Image 1 (cartoon, rainbow, N blue to C red):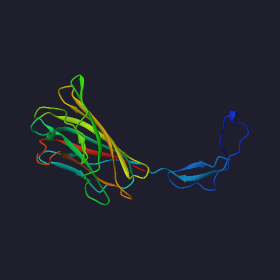
Image 2 (image 1 turned 90 degrees about the horizontal axis):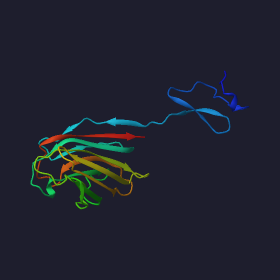
Image 3 (image 1 turned 180 degrees about the vertical axis):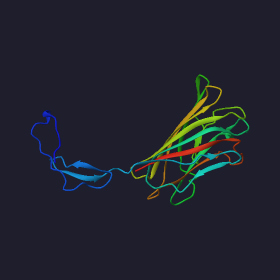
Image 4 (image 1 turned 135 degrees about the horizontal axis):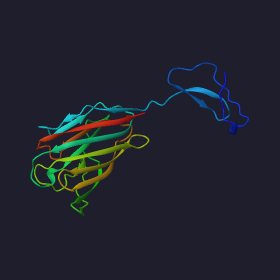
Length: 212
């Protein structure tokens, strides 16, 4: 049994393990020349099935695993006909192991960019992660994404969001965080119309996440 090494390695001894290891294991060094088999990382990427928004005021992803390290929420062709006011916005709520949906405690900040000038920094919410529809007219279509990632203990979740309107150069962005509380882990993500009184006319939403 031998391992070929370049001449530049000089005199160097590596002690191989006594067996062939198990499937998908890799050789790991202790830094002193001894090699052993170790289990590879179990990171995995999941794409959930797309959920239609048409005719509903919510779209929910529940039963999520407790070891999510990164989540990407995406939406396309999102539209609902409503007056040109704050209730045209959307929201995203999180659920955790002690409650279905968190309805308070969101530390949220938004920026709206309208045409070619920055036109606002308001619209923040504490009862949801707000997605600014962007001062649109009735029936405008929104496409965008939200990136969510936890602290090391997964008790605090951070997010960044970007939304773009079709047919013009309006877009909005936001960021924030929420504290889940002691020992609670993420179990669900829900997209909703801000006032729950109006339904989406069209669109779809999807969730993708990394576990490890």
